Length: 174
Length: 428
Image 1 (cartoon, rainbow over the protein chains, first blue to last red):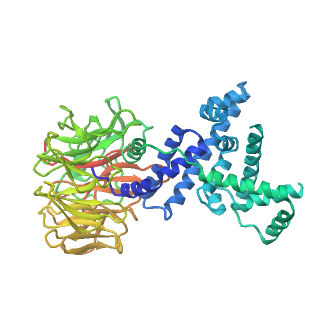
Image 2: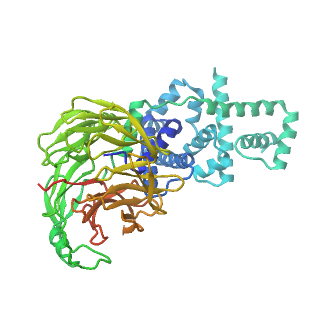
């Protein structure tokens, strides 16, 4: 069997962008295995598009949009699980650790103040700030996370100020 | 909200968004007189830079290859393998009676064959003219990580082995295929061979995507789908591995002396490599090479200036275009008698057949979904191909059969995971 047809297009996009996308996903969902799954899902969707003759014009932006959506909706699902668990008597910190042991590890070890601070803001805010760090403009980020420009600006403003508060507290502790 | 809070919000917003002129004035005016806010704003900028500078975890080559392999090789794995073969296929196709009843056999993963739906297949827009050539023989394909054959005469589906990318030996007496480790985190594909009934499974060695030489004595393969720049040839028993300058998109010349191969993606280069490893010649810019049965020309897809199906004469390098204006073409396949070329268009999803005598391509299957990977029956009367449902979900390919004049299109599977169909070269 040859590398078939559309596969080559996807392989090229994979070679160009999979590491930076993985970095983005890993930082957004804070779970390497989950990030690998989402990376695979992102490229499976690209494969679907390309094979359907709808190869995106700007594949990097398209990949980030899909990856952001996947990461954020995963974050929402997890938040729902935590709410559900706490409602049924599982203490919130335990529920949080249940659903994300590595997040707890990051918090407890505090080996990386910035990442641990990022872990304390919502998944969509985190995704937005990391996208910004990867060079996307506010308008592009809005498109990626599926919000309006003004809503994205508000989300990111609050997230940046909140992040600063958390980091300032950490700096004060040391 | 205090002025300080308002200013900090503006400063945070300014990192990603253009402020309006009044906003910018408010910010600048305040910062010029407020040391505390200036420090705070500097810290916000430093945080943003720290986020950008953070070195993310990277994937190892093994893991990234494994993920790509799963994207390319595996398909939707949640649904159990379901295959539907049209039991009365032979009768139906021979008589082309659109209303002929067909008992649908559903093959389940536990190897039981069960009658489930005794309903006639729908043949929209097909005139029931008698066919001179009934579809017979066996079609080899992969579905959900396993390899199957369908016997067209009986409709029987046989599961042969776990694996992917099956390829018939030229005399139809053996099947080469790829099998990866059961652990999905590991991408360590091996090439295997087996008998057409799945017996005598033998591992030959590491490799991916085997294709037999026309004399059946050698097998060309690559190491992985990720590296478009590797091509190897070995003896059919797995010995004598030779590295060639080529990629995983290749086709043996009919005399087995050379291999046409495309390297690189996007601006792929089509070249000829000697199968004994003695040299490489550039042919043209393009990919998806397919040799004419008489070995005098290689059909391929050219992308520049617009997508077209071109022919190149390997002895002179002369290139001519035989089909253009049909969108991004893929899946080029020469008919066994060399009189026609089948190809599919990514833009429209159509399956076309273009006569070598000249003339426009004939649309054989209109692409409601995306047709791909056409393969001809030995008598040139039928084409088996994949059809992938369009949509946001991962590709869901199934295998279809159609007469080369466009009549009698029928699905052979309904699993949404079947691909790589190939007609058995000689009748069993």
